[in-house]
Amino acid sequence: MGIKIFKNFIGRVFTNIFRNKKDIKLGFYGPPNAGKTSLANRICKDFTGEEIGSVSKVPHETRSVQFKEKVEINYKGKTMMFKMIDTPGIATKIDYEDFLKYKVSRKDAKKRAKEATQGIVDSIKWLEDMDMVVVVLDSTENPYNQVNITIIGNLIARKIPVLIVANKVDKKKSDIKKIEAAFPEYEVIGISAKYGKNLEEFYESIFKLSKKI
Image 1 (tube, rainbow, N blue to C red):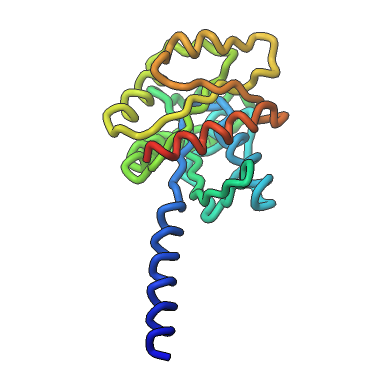
Image 2: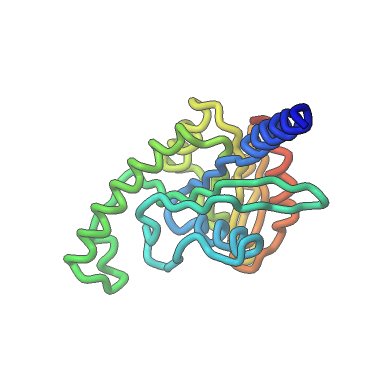
């Protein structure tokens, strides 16, 4: 009886160790309005039935780090457990006047700008806790800018495995090749978070990237 209890105890220990290894902290980073939250929402909705946060056309809708625990992704018979971490859009400068064009009151604009600035600081701090990062870029925008270089530079410095997602391929101005040329050392996956296009390839790449942890 004692041997059986001991075996059960050892079994639980190994199970917990294995489970902890599978709980991968996956962060979503990128500039404002690139589609980070839209992508995180679609993944969480598909596998948990719940979204991670709200989206809006107004820049910096996500102004604080938000996350969802225990998102179990099943793909081609494989299963992995993730902690999904959605971060505020990274920007080199936030001016409250930028919010006024979206019919936001001056008082609310100043509040949003302050919260967004703090959100960026928190996002960089959270990098210390990431196992993997998905950098979401708008494929209709020029990827050669200070924000994207800053994000990638921080990831390189921390040696964090990275997958670059070129979002909004459903739009006519989409140009994945520009993003591939800007960051040739990384794999780039073209998707549409809005319509769920090409998510199969995205999951394939996520599972493959996890082997680098």
